[in-house]
Length: 276
Length: 267
Image (tube, rainbow over all chains, first blue to last red; front, side, top):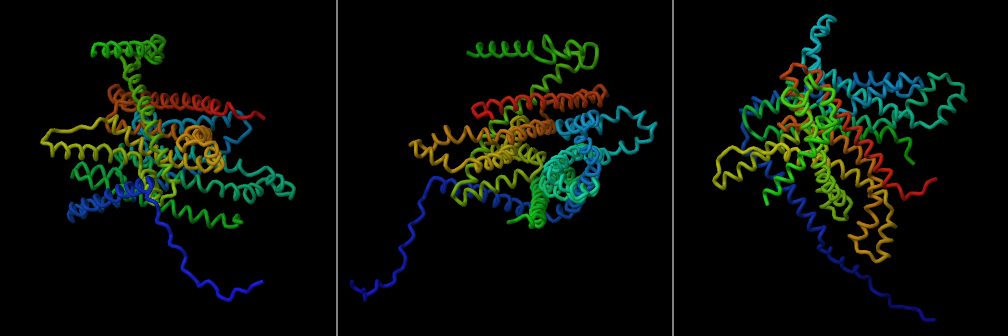
């Protein structure tokens, strides 16, 4: 046996081989380059066409449009949440008539475009003006904003009812049985055992539904409600400045991304007890 | 040669006018709409609405392959090893999923108009330029569809185990051939329900293109409503037509799903 008395001196690791220049790397650089060029191009057109007068004239109207969009979406989501409860219960009911009615409601509102529903309410209900006047509801349906709120609330109620139903049905049977074995009354079991678990499942679809409503609310501009999109169209038709659409796009993207991040944080926070 | 095309075109139009479910030989409007606002021909709006139905259906069908192909490549980019490619693909989906479809449509429609006008202006042409609403709708809806489609396909890609790729390598298949023969058939099977939902959303989004002047269901019924002052009836018909499209496609998709699963073991 021999003892090595001269150790190999410490050495630097061999140099990392250079990353090969592959086709995907080339494509990635090209794609990023296109985005960069677009971003820089938009930036320079904005800088070049910067007009303090335009900003002071259309800036406030953009903000008021943003307010209209947010109010419309928030109120229709809230009203829709209330309306979705009976629809979801009807969908889950064992009674043939109720479940069929709720199914027809959901199918109609999910199967037709929102814009068609809006036209049906705004222009179509005008055909029933005498009847509506006689029951004293005409003042409500005369206004485009009210019609939009009415349509959106009914529409989102159909989607939210499906979300709610899916979430409640996703709670395993054992949970019902466990609550029954503990002797909990059905009401308490529903509100304290089933619903909290269902809401965690429903959280993500609810977020998606709010985003869909924010995006869908742009169509109210067509029936003369001046939301963000309506203000944008008005400003564009006066100035023929394409920047208006860029600003609107930025605002919509900001809203959606903000909501998405808040929702992601909320979900991580609410499901932290489920992490292993 | 042009005579041949004209003959083909008139032949196709003739066949279409016979099998047309609205104003054809066995058409609904021909048999039940006579004498009402829905009569075919010059007296009613039946044939105009039938044309709108055709335009809506063809816009959706023409957009589908565009969106699917772009979405497939964006999904491939999202799962590549290259960071820059992933980043670019993620920017794409973030933008086009976050923008309202209507705004995307306007940006494409007016933006394209301005671009083409500037381009023609440099060539010395100073006339008015009008973009085809069908083309603008196809681009805008195709881009939105592809953004959503890439997410569906990405999650389907993630559901396919790595061993499938390795098996392709072990068999000595080229990468493109592995994709075509091994991955794609499984991908379609996994992604089909998600793609079905996207197709429904696409069908509904086509109604937006009527805003920039495409004579689709909504625009045709809207014109009829304005002329006849029977708005509820005509917009109700528009809703029913969209429901029919949704029903037909859900039947078609469940048949397709059965067909893709025909080789799976029955338990």
